[in-house]
Structure formats: C-alpha cells, structure tokens
Amino acid sequence: MDLNSDLGESFGSWRLGDDTAMLDVVSSANIACGFHAGDPRTLLAACERAAQQGVSIGAQVGYRDLPGFGRRFIDYESDDLIADVLYQIGALDGLARVSGSRVRYVKPHGALYNTIVHHEQQAAAVVEAVRRYDPELPVLGLPGSAFLRLAADKGLRTVREAFADRGYRNDGTLVPRSDEGAVLHDPVVVAARMARLVTEGTLVATDGTTLMVQAESICVHGDSPGAVAMARAVGDALRAQGVRVEAFA
Image (cartoon, rainbow, N blue to C red; front, side, top):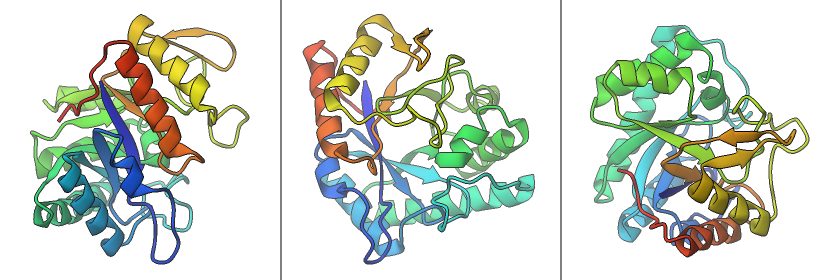
C-alpha cells in the first residue's frame, strides 16, 4: 500500500506543514505546482528532499487560486485547463529532474479533485493534459470518479485513493470541508480506520453507512494538525497488518 501526503504548500515566509519530517514517513509526495500553493524555492526543496529519501514525486495540479488555496471551484474552458495542467506538470518535472528524480504520477488538488469526480468536461481536460505530457504517467484519484473512468478510457494507468483523515459521505465522496466531520484529527481513530480498510476493504461514512472502498494509496493531508504523527500511526497500523508501505510508481 502506498502512503501519500500533500507537500510543498508553504509560500515564502509563510510555513505550512513539516515537509522534511513527512518525507521520512510517506512513500509518495503530492508536491504542489505553484498554482494553489508553493513557491519555486519551496517546491525545489521538497523535490530535493523527496529524491534524497527515495520518495516518489507526484505533481499535485490545481486551480490557479493561491488566495483560496485551490479550494474554490473555477469554471474553466477546456483549453485553459489543459494548458494550466500542462504548465504545472512541466514546471514541477523540471524541478524534480534537477533534483535527481522526476514526476512519476499526477494527482489533482482540492476543488479540482472534487469537481472532477462528477464534472465530465473538466475531468476530460485534466486527462488530456496528462496524456499529452506523458501517457505513461499514472493518475491518482477517487474510486468511481469520472476522472479515473475517462483516464482509463484514454489508456492511462489509474490508481484509486482513500483518505485517512477525511470523512466520507454515504455515496463514497468526501464530506465538504465546510461541514462537520470533514476532517479527522485523532491518530488512533484514523489508524484504526486504515487498518480496517486494508483488512476488510471498508470505511464507515459519517451517517454510519459501511462503504466498500478499494484503494492502492492512502492520503494523509500534510496541512492537518499533527499530520506527521498521524502519518506515522497509519504507517504503523498498515505494517502491523502485514502490509508493506511502498510507492505505486
């Protein structure tokens, strides 16, 4: 099982998360590309550290929305979204390559991630950008999403993701961050949920519904309070079940 986290989200003197500590724990790093978060120096440092630790680098592409941290919907024309995603992948891939690595997969961020669960036009645009850049790049997304379906239709490798520290609705989508129960904070509870995921293939939604969830990667958000401790707890819980933590790409 892969364990991933969102990194590179600091900007200048404003710090968010502990990239150095998190890169000692995770197997894959979803590194921001400067549109929703991150500045070039921060992104380069994250790529260099990931390369040193043997952590797989993913381009976390998002809406062009630094003030909103990429968590607000933007109604893009397809050509604009394709160009923006291409720009982000290319920029991060350049930083990754001079660090001795490369971008090995693509994961959308925030509002874009949630939008393309159902928004066919934007999902198709992201798929097209990845296909144009490198059709061998896997894409990471929510099981059952339009994004993963369209990506598979275009011949891209799709990787299903579960969220350790986010609440689920009974339809398998994430609880919006504006709602109660959207973010989980107790490492013990989160670790137990992930142990259940890998042993039973299930998660419990906020209304008590049991969901069948198939995933090859687990995300712990790097900007959550106590994120590093939570990631360590999840990793320990997986290994306690005999599951090896390793990158999918």
